[in-house]
Length: 83
Picture 1 (cartoon, rainbow, N blue to C red):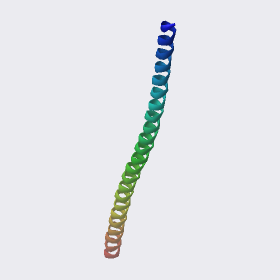
Picture 2: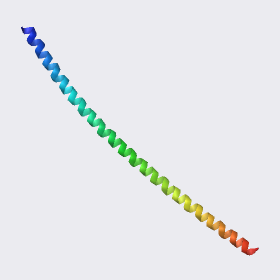
Picture 3: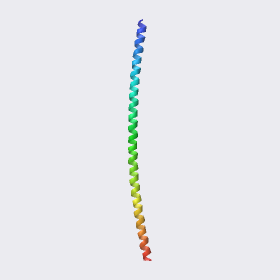
Picture 4: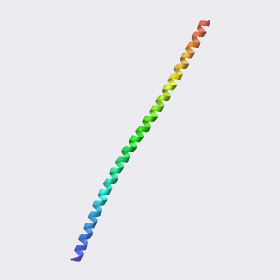
């Protein structure tokens, strides 16, 4: 009888430990989801910043090219008028 009681107690202890471990694993998985979502959000934020930087750079380059083209056009008009 004592052996049966000891086995029942051990089984109960193992069951409770398994339940606690399962709950802890659930908490870990929830934390992982939060970290993953935060990571994705931060990555998207960095990507948006990089795209904005590239857009500003491209806009500046386009403005510089347009300014040079206007300058060249004026130079050609002046040369044509001189002929």
